[in-house]
Amino acid sequence: VQLQASGGGSVQPGGSLRLSCAASGASFRGNVMGWYRQAPGNEREWVASITGAGLTNYSDSVKGRFTISRDVAKNTVYLQMNSLKSEDTAVYYCRGSRGKIYWGKGTLVTVSS
Image (cartoon, rainbow, N blue to C red; front, side):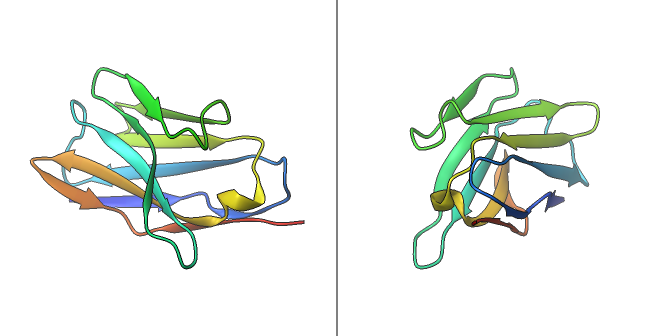
């Protein structure tokens, strides 16, 4: 089972990016998937999650700016990030829960002018 995150890059404050996390080797159709991030010198923190039923939840720091969604047919979870701030700079990781916890390799998001 693998989770492959992509879509990171560099963007100016106020810009947008969309991250993708494609799962392979198993279906996460009915399972919780989420996004976490780790900024330099900080611990990894939870950003957003989505249940198998499509219920979403967000950390206060991204609520109203980020949107998590999933495409069940593609076994993929997305994170649409709008109104990005410098403090959103971090390596973003996707996480899937399916009996055990699976982590994807991170994708770097840099928000800087």
